[in-house]
Image 1 (tube, helix red, strand yellow):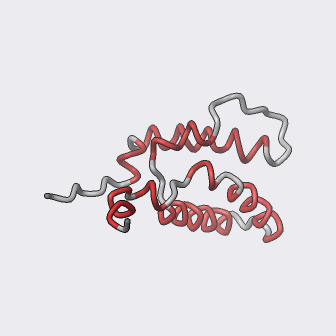
Image 2: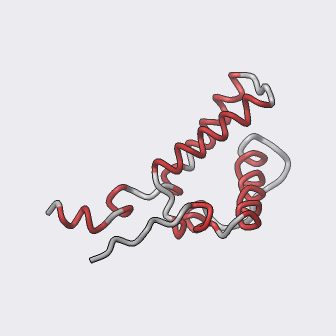
Length: 111
C-alpha cells in the first residue's frame, strides 16, 4: 500500500487568495473584537472555519513563530505581545486537530 504524500497547508488552504481571506477574517475576529475594538465579528465559529483544514500542532507552532516574527518586526511591546498571544492561543482548541484525528490509522495500529 502506497502512503499518500502529505499536501502542504498552503495548498490545503487554497493558495494565496484564500490565505488572504483567512487573514482578513482573523484580523476581524481576533485582532479587533477580542482586543476591544469597535468592530463585531458575525461570521462562522473558529471550529467551523478551520476544522476541514486539518491543521496540525506543528503547523500551529509555525503560525505562532511567524506571528512572533511579525510582532517583533513592528516593535510591538512585550506586554502587548503576551496579550495578543493569549488571545490567539485561546483559539487553539477549535483550530488544531488532535494527534488521534491527525493520523487515525496510526491510532488504530496502536490498539
